[in-house]
Image 1: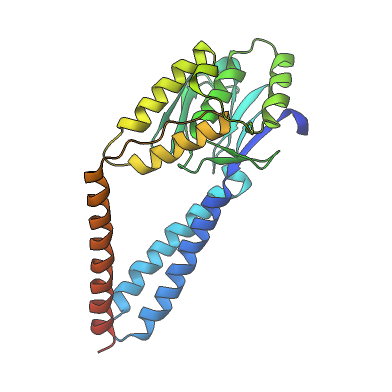
Image 2 (image 1 turned 90 degrees about the horizontal axis):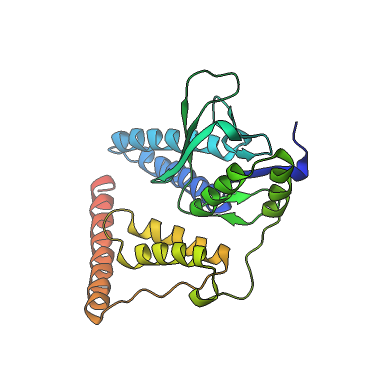
Length: 253
Protein backbone atom coordinates (compact mmCIF):
# COMPACT_ATOMS: atom_id res chain seq x y z
CA UNK A 1 0.00 0.00 0.00
CA UNK A 2 1.29 3.45 -0.96
CA UNK A 3 2.32 5.84 1.80
CA UNK A 4 0.09 8.82 2.47
CA UNK A 5 2.69 11.36 1.34
CA UNK A 6 3.27 9.49 -1.91
CA UNK A 7 -0.34 9.48 -3.13
CA UNK A 8 -2.47 12.03 -4.96
CA UNK A 9 -6.23 11.73 -4.39
CA UNK A 10 -8.51 13.75 -6.66
CA UNK A 11 -11.98 13.89 -5.12
CA UNK A 12 -15.22 15.65 -6.07
CA UNK A 13 -14.94 19.42 -5.74
CA UNK A 14 -16.75 21.42 -3.06
CA UNK A 15 -18.68 23.29 -5.77
CA UNK A 16 -19.93 20.02 -7.25
CA UNK A 17 -21.03 18.76 -3.83
CA UNK A 18 -22.78 22.05 -3.06
CA UNK A 19 -24.52 22.13 -6.45
CA UNK A 20 -25.71 18.52 -6.12
CA UNK A 21 -26.95 19.02 -2.55
CA UNK A 22 -28.79 22.21 -3.58
CA UNK A 23 -30.37 20.38 -6.53
CA UNK A 24 -31.65 17.58 -4.28
CA UNK A 25 -33.03 20.04 -1.71
CA UNK A 26 -34.77 22.04 -4.45
CA UNK A 27 -36.38 18.85 -5.81
CA UNK A 28 -37.62 17.96 -2.31
CA UNK A 29 -39.02 21.46 -1.80
CA UNK A 30 -40.83 21.51 -5.15
CA UNK A 31 -42.14 17.97 -4.58
CA UNK A 32 -43.72 19.16 -1.33
CA UNK A 33 -45.29 22.20 -3.01
CA UNK A 34 -46.71 20.28 -5.98
CA UNK A 35 -47.87 17.42 -3.75
CA UNK A 36 -50.22 19.85 -1.98
CA UNK A 37 -51.78 20.82 -5.29
CA UNK A 38 -54.64 18.62 -6.61
CA UNK A 39 -53.13 18.74 -10.11
CA UNK A 40 -49.50 18.43 -9.12
CA UNK A 41 -49.23 14.60 -9.08
CA UNK A 42 -47.49 14.12 -12.49
CA UNK A 43 -45.00 16.90 -11.80
CA UNK A 44 -44.26 15.41 -8.37
CA UNK A 45 -43.38 12.08 -10.03
CA UNK A 46 -41.01 13.82 -12.46
CA UNK A 47 -39.33 15.60 -9.56
CA UNK A 48 -39.04 12.28 -7.70
CA UNK A 49 -37.07 10.73 -10.57
CA UNK A 50 -34.90 13.85 -10.84
CA UNK A 51 -34.20 13.52 -7.12
CA UNK A 52 -33.32 9.85 -7.62
CA UNK A 53 -30.79 10.81 -10.32
CA UNK A 54 -29.34 13.46 -8.00
CA UNK A 55 -28.93 10.94 -5.17
CA UNK A 56 -27.09 8.60 -7.56
CA UNK A 57 -24.77 11.49 -8.37
CA UNK A 58 -23.86 11.72 -4.69
CA UNK A 59 -22.02 8.39 -5.08
CA UNK A 60 -19.35 10.31 -7.00
CA UNK A 61 -18.80 12.41 -3.85
CA UNK A 62 -17.74 9.37 -1.81
CA UNK A 63 -14.34 7.65 -1.71
CA UNK A 64 -15.59 5.32 -4.44
CA UNK A 65 -15.51 8.21 -6.90
CA UNK A 66 -11.92 9.28 -6.15
CA UNK A 67 -9.11 9.14 -8.72
CA UNK A 68 -5.93 7.89 -7.01
CA UNK A 69 -2.40 8.35 -8.35
CA UNK A 70 0.45 6.43 -6.71
CA UNK A 71 4.01 5.62 -7.75
CA UNK A 72 2.87 2.17 -8.95
CA UNK A 73 -0.56 2.65 -10.49
CA UNK A 74 -3.50 4.87 -11.46
CA UNK A 75 -6.77 3.81 -9.82
CA UNK A 76 -10.39 4.82 -10.40
CA UNK A 77 -13.93 3.46 -10.80
CA UNK A 78 -17.13 4.04 -8.82
CA UNK A 79 -18.62 0.56 -8.51
CA UNK A 80 -15.63 -1.49 -9.74
CA UNK A 81 -12.21 -0.06 -8.86
CA UNK A 82 -9.51 -0.68 -11.46
CA UNK A 83 -5.76 -0.25 -11.11
CA UNK A 84 -3.65 0.55 -14.14
CA UNK A 85 0.14 0.19 -13.73
CA UNK A 86 1.85 3.22 -15.26
CA UNK A 87 3.78 1.18 -17.81
CA UNK A 88 0.53 -0.44 -18.99
CA UNK A 89 -1.30 2.83 -19.79
CA UNK A 90 -1.28 3.43 -23.54
CA UNK A 91 -3.28 6.64 -23.95
CA UNK A 92 -4.87 9.47 -21.93
CA UNK A 93 -7.44 11.90 -23.34
CA UNK A 94 -10.33 14.16 -22.34
CA UNK A 95 -14.00 14.48 -23.32
CA UNK A 96 -16.97 16.53 -22.18
CA UNK A 97 -16.81 16.42 -18.36
CA UNK A 98 -14.69 13.25 -18.43
CA UNK A 99 -11.11 12.00 -18.48
CA UNK A 100 -10.38 8.76 -20.29
CA UNK A 101 -7.42 6.42 -20.39
CA UNK A 102 -6.79 3.03 -21.86
CA UNK A 103 -4.42 0.26 -20.90
CA UNK A 104 -4.16 -3.06 -19.10
CA UNK A 105 -5.15 -3.45 -15.47
CA UNK A 106 -3.27 -5.62 -12.99
CA UNK A 107 -3.42 -9.30 -14.09
CA UNK A 108 -5.50 -8.40 -17.16
CA UNK A 109 -4.72 -9.73 -20.63
CA UNK A 110 -7.01 -7.47 -22.65
CA UNK A 111 -6.76 -3.70 -22.88
CA UNK A 112 -9.52 -1.76 -21.11
CA UNK A 113 -10.80 1.81 -21.31
CA UNK A 114 -11.61 3.74 -18.14
CA UNK A 115 -14.02 6.71 -18.05
CA UNK A 116 -13.92 9.14 -15.11
CA UNK A 117 -16.23 12.04 -14.38
CA UNK A 118 -14.45 15.39 -14.30
CA UNK A 119 -16.89 18.31 -14.44
CA UNK A 120 -15.94 21.83 -15.52
CA UNK A 121 -15.33 22.89 -11.90
CA UNK A 122 -12.55 20.31 -11.71
CA UNK A 123 -11.70 18.12 -8.73
CA UNK A 124 -10.14 18.82 -5.37
CA UNK A 125 -6.69 17.57 -4.43
CA UNK A 126 -7.17 15.96 -1.02
CA UNK A 127 -3.69 16.79 0.28
CA UNK A 128 -3.84 20.59 -0.13
CA UNK A 129 -7.58 21.22 -0.76
CA UNK A 130 -6.77 23.05 -4.01
CA UNK A 131 -8.80 22.76 -7.20
CA UNK A 132 -7.34 20.72 -10.07
CA UNK A 133 -8.78 21.36 -13.52
CA UNK A 134 -9.24 18.66 -16.12
CA UNK A 135 -6.30 19.92 -18.19
CA UNK A 136 -4.01 20.05 -15.14
CA UNK A 137 -5.03 16.52 -14.09
CA UNK A 138 -4.14 15.17 -17.54
CA UNK A 139 -0.83 17.04 -17.33
CA UNK A 140 -0.07 15.39 -13.98
CA UNK A 141 -1.00 11.93 -15.27
CA UNK A 142 1.20 12.36 -18.35
CA UNK A 143 4.14 13.60 -16.24
CA UNK A 144 3.96 10.66 -13.82
CA UNK A 145 3.45 8.23 -16.69
CA UNK A 146 6.55 9.52 -18.52
CA UNK A 147 8.87 9.00 -15.53
CA UNK A 148 10.90 5.81 -15.77
CA UNK A 149 11.48 4.61 -12.21
CA UNK A 150 9.21 4.20 -9.20
CA UNK A 151 11.47 6.31 -6.98
CA UNK A 152 11.31 9.22 -9.46
CA UNK A 153 7.53 8.92 -9.55
CA UNK A 154 7.43 9.13 -5.74
CA UNK A 155 9.47 12.34 -5.80
CA UNK A 156 7.26 13.83 -8.51
CA UNK A 157 4.06 12.94 -6.63
CA UNK A 158 5.41 14.58 -3.44
CA UNK A 159 6.02 17.73 -5.45
CA UNK A 160 2.67 17.76 -7.26
CA UNK A 161 0.50 17.00 -4.22
CA UNK A 162 1.77 20.13 -2.45
CA UNK A 163 1.48 22.28 -5.57
CA UNK A 164 -0.02 25.73 -5.00
CA UNK A 165 -0.87 28.39 -7.62
CA UNK A 166 1.78 31.16 -7.87
CA UNK A 167 0.74 34.49 -6.37
CA UNK A 168 2.23 36.51 -9.25
CA UNK A 169 0.83 35.74 -12.71
CA UNK A 170 3.27 35.24 -15.58
CA UNK A 171 2.70 36.61 -19.06
CA UNK A 172 3.31 34.59 -22.22
CA UNK A 173 6.80 36.06 -22.70
CA UNK A 174 7.89 34.72 -19.30
CA UNK A 175 7.01 31.11 -20.14
CA UNK A 176 9.21 28.38 -21.57
CA UNK A 177 8.79 27.44 -25.27
CA UNK A 178 6.83 24.32 -24.29
CA UNK A 179 4.57 26.34 -21.99
CA UNK A 180 4.10 29.00 -24.67
CA UNK A 181 2.88 26.35 -27.10
CA UNK A 182 0.22 25.18 -24.65
CA UNK A 183 -0.61 28.78 -23.72
CA UNK A 184 -1.26 29.65 -27.38
CA UNK A 185 -3.41 26.56 -27.98
CA UNK A 186 -5.65 27.05 -24.93
CA UNK A 187 -5.82 30.84 -25.29
CA UNK A 188 -6.90 30.47 -28.92
CA UNK A 189 -9.55 27.93 -27.90
CA UNK A 190 -10.74 30.28 -25.13
CA UNK A 191 -11.19 33.16 -27.59
CA UNK A 192 -12.77 31.27 -30.49
CA UNK A 193 -14.85 28.47 -28.94
CA UNK A 194 -18.55 28.62 -29.81
CA UNK A 195 -21.65 26.46 -29.46
CA UNK A 196 -22.75 24.01 -26.80
CA UNK A 197 -20.51 23.78 -23.74
CA UNK A 198 -18.76 27.11 -24.43
CA UNK A 199 -19.22 28.48 -20.90
CA UNK A 200 -18.12 25.25 -19.22
CA UNK A 201 -15.00 24.96 -21.38
CA UNK A 202 -14.05 28.58 -20.73
CA UNK A 203 -14.38 27.92 -16.99
CA UNK A 204 -12.04 24.92 -17.35
CA UNK A 205 -9.43 26.93 -19.26
CA UNK A 206 -9.68 29.88 -16.83
CA UNK A 207 -9.14 27.56 -13.85
CA UNK A 208 -6.17 25.90 -15.55
CA UNK A 209 -4.49 29.27 -16.19
CA UNK A 210 -5.05 30.30 -12.56
CA UNK A 211 -3.58 27.02 -11.30
CA UNK A 212 -0.53 27.42 -13.54
CA UNK A 213 -0.11 31.10 -12.66
CA UNK A 214 -0.52 32.26 -16.26
CA UNK A 215 -2.19 35.51 -17.27
CA UNK A 216 -5.10 34.79 -19.62
CA UNK A 217 -5.99 37.29 -22.34
CA UNK A 218 -9.48 38.80 -21.78
CA UNK A 219 -12.29 37.93 -24.20
CA UNK A 220 -12.76 40.50 -26.94
CA UNK A 221 -16.45 41.48 -26.86
CA UNK A 222 -17.95 43.95 -29.35
CA UNK A 223 -20.60 46.53 -28.45
CA UNK A 224 -23.16 44.60 -30.51
CA UNK A 225 -22.50 41.44 -28.51
CA UNK A 226 -22.91 43.35 -25.24
CA UNK A 227 -26.29 44.77 -26.33
CA UNK A 228 -27.48 41.36 -27.54
CA UNK A 229 -26.42 39.78 -24.25
CA UNK A 230 -28.36 42.33 -22.19
CA UNK A 231 -31.49 41.89 -24.33
CA UNK A 232 -31.22 38.09 -24.04
CA UNK A 233 -30.95 38.24 -20.23
CA UNK A 234 -33.97 40.56 -20.12
CA UNK A 235 -35.94 38.13 -22.28
CA UNK A 236 -35.04 35.19 -20.02
CA UNK A 237 -36.12 37.15 -16.93
CA UNK A 238 -39.50 38.13 -18.41
CA UNK A 239 -40.12 34.61 -19.76
CA UNK A 240 -39.34 33.11 -16.35
CA UNK A 241 -41.82 35.39 -14.59
CA UNK A 242 -44.55 34.58 -17.15
CA UNK A 243 -43.99 30.81 -16.89
CA UNK A 244 -44.04 30.86 -13.08
CA UNK A 245 -47.27 32.88 -13.05
CA UNK A 246 -48.92 30.40 -15.46
CA UNK A 247 -47.87 27.44 -13.30
CA UNK A 248 -49.15 29.13 -10.16
CA UNK A 249 -52.56 29.91 -11.68
CA UNK A 250 -52.86 26.37 -13.05
CA UNK A 251 -51.93 24.60 -9.82
CA UNK A 252 -53.63 26.95 -7.38
CA UNK A 253 -56.78 28.29 -9.13
